Image (cartoon, rainbow, N blue to C red; front, side, top):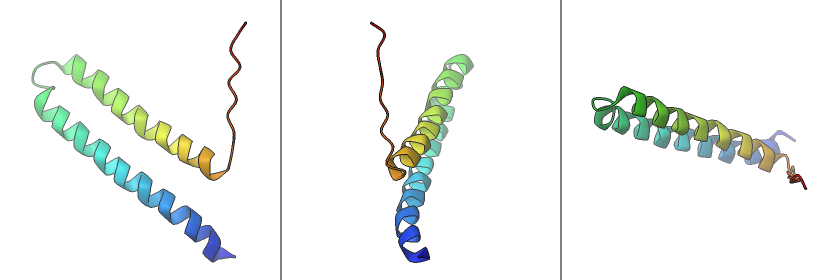
Length: 75
């Protein structure tokens, strides 16, 4: 019973780990390039990059749980 669960969870963990490394590399490059010019702009861009990582985690959990998200617009 543990093997099928591991086969489902390990690829998700690997994907999240490597995408986290990519986000950290983006943050490091922006720290070197953007921060000396504008600390405010660096903070805004860094916030967006960190938010993308958390949104990816939410998407992965929703996908793994086979959830469907329905969005109902207001009339």
